[in-house]
Amino acid sequence: MRRLPPLHALQVFEVAARAGSYAQAGLELGLTHGAVSRQVAALEAWLGQRLFVRVGRRMVPTPAARVFAEEISLSFDRLTAASEACGRPQAPRVLRVSAPATFAMRWLIPRLDDFHAARPDTEVRVTTTTTLQDALRGGFDLAVRRGPEPWPQHRAVPFLTEADTLVASPALLRNRPLATPGDLESHVLLGTETRPGDWSDWLAAAGVALPGGVRRRVFDHYFVTLQALEDGTGLGIGPFPILDRMVAADRLAVPFPEIRVERAAYFALTPFDADKSPALTALIDWLVAEGGRPGLTIPR
Image 1 (cartoon, rainbow, N blue to C red):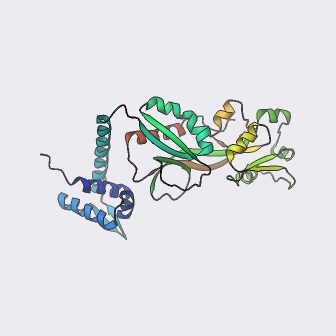
Image 2: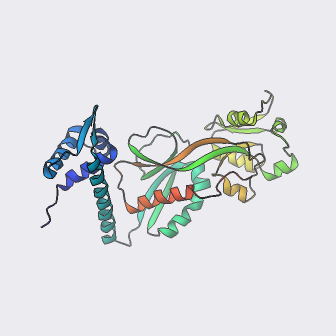
Image 3: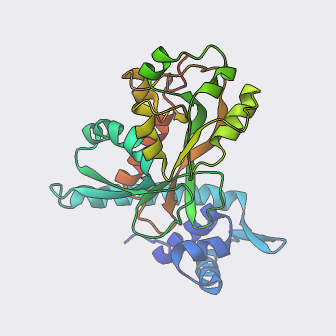
C-alpha cells in the first residue's frame, strides 16, 4: 500500500499555501482558523518539518512548502480530470456565468460559439446584471465584473481592458458631420444613469467645454442608450472592444478614435469554494485568450 499523507490535511494545506494565510484558507474551505491550523499541524507532524512560519500576525508558507503546494495542486487537477473522464461523458458540464448586460450581449455571447466548438461537452448559461456594481451573490460558477475592487472571497483574473470614445450612427454623421469635437454643440448627447462619468471624462480628454444649453437625454441602462444610438437619436460614448463588432457591421461609427478614455479591466471572478473543474479552467483560459487577441481596439 502507498504510504500517503492525510488527504484532508493535504487539501487544507494546498489552499492555505495558495491563499497565503490561514484566515483566507478558512474562508475558502468554510473552516475556522483553528481547524486550518490543526490540519496543517497534522501534515507537519507526518512530514517531520515545518511548512509555515509566523511573519507578523500571519502564517506564511516556507519556500519548500510553496514548491510542495504547487505539486499537490497539479495532482489535484489531474485527479479532477481523471474523475471527470471516468464519469458520464454524455452528461454536459454546465457553467453558470453572471455578466453585465451590455458586455454579455455585445461581447461575450457573440463569441461563445467558439468556446462551444472547442468544448462541446460544456454548456455556458449566461445571466445578466444591470450594473457593474451588482453584488456578488451566489448562483454562479464565474462572474464578470470590472475592477479594481476588493473581492476577498473570489479569485480574480483580468482578461480584457476597455476604453471609451465617441460613437454615433453612420447615418447621423453623414447628415450632420463632425469636423471637430466642438461641433457637438448642435447634437443631442445621450447618457446613461449607470455610467454617469462617461461624457464628463470624454469631454475632458477632448479639451471641450460645452455650454449649458446643449440638449441631453439620459436613459436608465446602457443597452437602452445603445439602441437610441443605433436609431440616430444622438451622440454617445461607447466602450471598446465591447462594441467592435457593431462598428465592423457599420451599425456605429467612431468620429474621433484618437480621443479615448482608458477604463478599468474586466475580471473573471470565481468563488474560492467553487469546484475548480477542467471546464471552468478552460473557460477562464478562453476569456484570457479572447481578451488578448490583437485588433480588438477602437478603430482608427
